[in-house]
Length: 594
Image 1: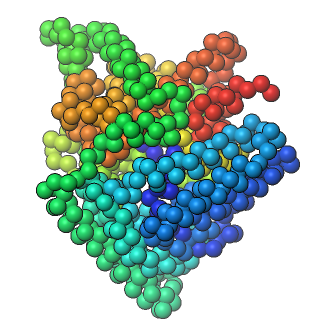
Image 2: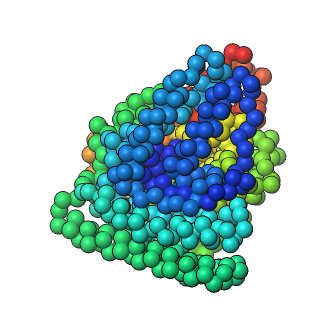
Image 3: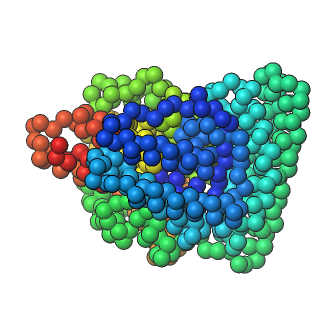
């Protein structure tokens, strides 16, 4: 799972009204890429739009490496939401005045992405309204952590910026409390957990940094005062949420399910696929059946090797499940989980280079770290990637440690991420998955396609890369690896079934856990974690299967058309050159006649 101001979710930053800002550091922000003379009117308008957009949404600007605005933390109140709506309407009018006949294919697709994002922002504010019922979207930690950990400017300057932000934290949380109406209990609990993690960012370590950074006594005193006020505001928000949660426990909480009326339009805006959510759901059901049939064949091949004389069950799910259970016992020890992930990254990189699957960038190494506390609670692994304005900043592979699990929970988790599946996880998150794709995205000549990326393309590429690596021979082309990969791929398919089933069809927790444990062969710990995730997110879980299916279908189409002239490396690099645009858009650009 990709995180750090996920580009496909830009509309959510609009909806939340979380516009925060950074200091005037124009010299730290790279200039726009050069454009042709024919495209210059559109390019000029686009650059003006982007600067205005970052002024409106400075938190998101920090996430993509745009450090021009960092000295404000806007209170997410009604006035700010009205300002966001006016901003979107104004820029839609400005772009509508362009003569689109003079735009080339690249500019036209950029324009389509800009319009889609602005229109989605309006829908999130006026219709989806998560700013009312999701307390977890109010959190000041991530931008502050990025400012402290990203060396875009000298530390004293960054601390001064953080101090200015801290001064406005009380007003921010006051507005957040005023926004919350009939929240879900699930999002309230997440907000409490993550807000407590926020205090680990707003710690006294900031004052120690200020001392070593050489700030003046006055600046240190101001920072200390602002820090104390911010800490008090966060604690006040936590207390407010705990009181609220106690009331919600007595009744009146909003259902976390968003329902079909919101689901279908959210799917269209977030996923941007050539199918409806219901059509995707039906395709996922068909793919689940295909995978079960394939795994049944593999289980027959492996049964005698691992199960010896044990009777083979007549029920294929029982047979597959028993074999997977046996294989899953082969996993690393809990204390080796984090080190093993770090050890596998260079192995994957060497494979990609040796097999000539695509070019890698050795100048931008991946940093594996424990997931920061303020980010925990949704996914066990994720990528935090910089944006195109600061492409040299670190990309982090966040791995949540197992120290919060008891022995049985840890064992269940480790069995889920056994010897085979842990490798597939690292392909997905790191090489050649999210980490590599986002490096390519930052180098795209279209800044818009990198900034306003599509989640289905991003997640779809990571899923596609898993199968592509196994097709290249990674893992030894063994039936064990293919069986475990198929189990992992069932997760992707069942993500879509689960998400649509829960939010639209009203699937119960019991039925969801049955789907995940019996039909997707997931451990109880993993299944319960996914149930938690589907309560906290909507539509995002469908992005994996949608994007994967579109990318794989497109590749197979080109292979059939080009025959022996098809070049896999060229396909990968050409595909990734279009930033993080929707797959349908990339297909059009790659197949357009010159």
